[in-house]
Length: 266
Ligand SMILES: Cc1cc2nc3c(=O)[nH]c(=O)nc-3n(C[C@H](O)[C@H](O)[C@H](O)COP(=O)(O)O)c2cc1C
Ligand code: SF4
Ligand code: SF4
Image (cartoon, rainbow, N blue to C red):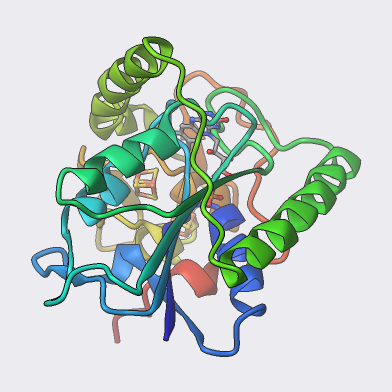
């Protein structure tokens, strides 16, 4: 069996994981956000992939905690191929070395690592790129994905470049920056356009959104800063700090919010 775990706020990593899975007849997709966080993740598939976005040159907290829960079955890793694919807007930093290092602590070997550039989704820094530019990035990403699929099929090894001491420094800076994200949700605000549809709470991978009686959101400060709530809100009702409320939102155009969301509560 080939199991592909993914974490994705705005659909980039999910879209690539889904396309990647099409290259393998036995691949199943598993959402990291929807796993039971109290349970170990048994590395028992013959092939396992992990798709995730780069945050601040490192890995999102939810992915970090997921990696810490991975355990080997009896008999160890022999015959089991593990690979990681990160998506970023062009600066992957130390994300892949961090994945390798977290798993190496438990003698788990990441056999292949890939970085694929996708459009930026960090709304506080930039809005959606013009469509033409997005399409160019998607085309290059699909090519890179095809190459990665061939390499995984052939069980080829590939490791991220490490330049000591730069990688150690980037890892340190990434860790510091990521630690500030949980409370950065204080900048989220919701305006009168909110219809109380509850989608923001359902797409939140961190259960960080409380809804009042009218279904209007508030944020509870254990945020991943994945931008899903803001980017998927169908009304554009969520704003961030002093950012121009008209800044263009982004999510992957071929992904639907429902593919990432928890089902509605009856
Ligand atoms: C909190 C946060 C931090 C980010 N940091 C980086 C970064 O350090 N380097 C980079 O190239 N892209 C960065 N990005 C952009 C995302 O990695 C990129 O858009 C990714 O493809 C989003 O994937 P997703 O749609 O699966 O969530 C960041 C995005 C977020 C939300
Ligand atoms: S997704 Fe938007 S419209 Fe729906 S409840 Fe959340 S803020 Fe309101
Ligand atoms: S509150 Fe918004 S930005 Fe924070 S984790 Fe949830 S969906 Fe992502």
